[in-house]
Image (cartoon, rainbow, N blue to C red; front, top):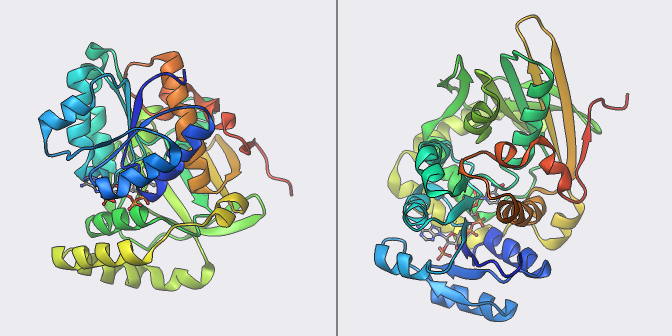
Length: 354
Ligand SMILES: NC(=O)c1ccc[n+]([C@@H]2O[C@H](COP(=O)([O-])OP(=O)(O)OC[C@H]3O[C@@H](n4cnc5c(N)ncnc54)[C@H](OP(=O)(O)O)[C@@H]3O)[C@@H](O)[C@H]2O)c1
């Protein structure tokens, strides 16, 4: 398996580099790619890997660079700007495509290629990181235990430090406002509203609806028509979230402000350091319920989100080579609800200790 040829696009980014290091640790030799030779070359040299400089706007150069590649892992986000040319090239050449997007329009676009992917005999599996492997696997786990479930809630806590690309992606998404899924449709939901308490291992937390990839992927994986995705916030922040996000939403509608914010983030945000990645924990809660109030809750206690992403994405790539899934799939559709438990340090609970 370690001789399979695969590519990491965006390998010089915070997360792409973590995935490249994890791949090398496990004996893989991915081709490292990105748009800047100055940034890609030193990482490839340090890890002893080949590299390619690819401008995604150049179709012929992209096609040439993919010759002999069996799988592309895209770590270059915001994915709204990078996924389409890579997916088109993968479909043309019969190459598996994966990424770590959490962006709903990107998921929607990728799932629309399901029949083409099946015809080409390839898998398109977006979201093979913290967003959405654990939430997707746990959604599937609780949904399977409540036949006919019509409500699904997914919440997470522990996202204390975030990477530059995650923050840049949030800048792109905030102008669109919040969303929830109701009766199968995505509908607007005011950012910063709807706080509630959710039990997590170690105590309950205040969570608030946020825009998370599972609004699309969990619908795809479970078919449950009403989905809310929530994130834990410190109690002191909660009263200010609605006004704060409303101001940001108005500001980030202006393209020049978004560009300025992206530049500032690129210079100032570094992402969690090794100590934070190795010591912090993240927690997931899922609840599925039917019309009669029968419900199932479950929890995951897991490694820090970027540490998880690096380890889980390489495991997912290994699974794709082994299982050869076909079509546009969520992680739980491709690998099953228990896949998340293959990641070192992940524990699933059906009950919390009182
Ligand atoms: N699913 C998950 O759990 C998960 C986990 C971590 C990160 N993410 C997502 O992954 C993405 C990357 O995060 P990060 O913190 O690693 O970002 P980062 O450090 O800012 O790196 C982003 C990478 O993408 C490249 N890139 C960005 N726009 C591009 C474009 N238009 N064309 C070609 N390359 C482009 C950058 O190239 P240059 O350096 O040349 O600009 C860089 O290699 C973000 O969208 C983030 O939200 C998801």
